[in-house]
Length: 610
Image (cartoon, rainbow, N blue to C red; front, top):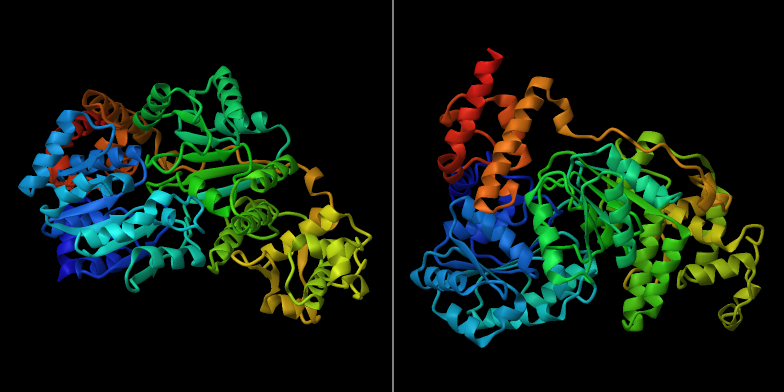
């Protein structure tokens, strides 16, 4: 019965015909009052898993969120759907705080967004004590874990604060959490084991493309030029690089804005607001432009420099295509990137245990860049998920030169087996090339048959071979341990001569940095391109009306209607408000507020066409 009511609210309030995969089970568990840990990919509708129960349950749902920008965006969107929501944060003026307090005391407020620091304040807890809190939602829950890619100490108090709220049911949500991170989330947030929902990490609407660096500025400019007028993000490794690339792209005629932590706060906020509110803006940014970005119509994410690790890569590319429409990712990598990231890890102030984890996570990202097989397969394998070749990443579409690498793989895995599967890449590489380091001599590994068996290849070639056989699934990486390599069942078959393996030619020959550039796709993979010329003209007018309304209301355009909604309006051309209510994303509140305006535009286009 819960889910039947939930589906009715889903349509009447949000305008969605049905749940996305995984949502119904999670929402059912929350409505039943159970504790939940939900790991779902970006763009799969995590927020709805607590927003829908919030409007169906009595009382208020408290949402712990790490960023003011994210809170403001969520409140704007909920308000547009006719839901009473608010946030308490340092950016609020007195009038907004007064509105939130009054709505909370009167029982009208359904969702209250707070930062963990604000939740910990005695005055906040006192305010909530008499406000009938019925659910605690912890967004970006990986921030509570020391193993998470974005650990934030202020999240550690949430488990204790939950007791202050009367141990109300809780849901913790994140898009990026491997097994150690999930275990840490459960230990720190829940007094007992929650119901776990680990959904596929796959984002099939994202096209994955990775290329070696040649001239990064030229490569990024060429990619963006084929996507002029689309919203996108370009990530850079440094503030200086961000400023330089933003300037060069602007000089080439692109509408670009810079964003990094060294900028004046007011300008940074202004640039972010412009990106959120307007179409066709490209933000060139460091990772300071991060979790608070919930713009659904970002059509591409580029990395001018290699990200910090697989989790960061996954989180950052996940900001593209949140509306479910096709989107693209383009990542450049080079040896200088690898040296810089490893240097940052070594020179960081983190404990040695943390550094070991970061080294292995970065190595996994390099393995993804050098993967000999479908990128999506390799990426999902990192999160423990098996998949068939996707057919539309760059490697599936264009392929790479492969050679029989069975002997090289056997040499590498023999070194692992003879040393008890207890060592990481550098020790094993030194063993293979015959480099008698202190560690090699201390363990008497210079006496093993594998000592020097690979001296015909340079050190970097063996490092690449280890990355290759990891990407091919022959060996596994103990992330939380000491970075040791372990043999998989498939690896044992190859080692025993019962199976063969192909590796990339550039890895086996040790010239990965010199391999030729692949021809990058120039044509974007967008649903808009499938519309007829007439529909494209209508779509342009629909976007213009949306932009006008958003400007008048001082709101991002997607708060009025998403791109997906406009695409359906342009293709289905509803001729009445009743039929318009069937369009994705048009609930009762939006139909009442915007329906007549958009219907009038559709009818005018119909008259012209007739």
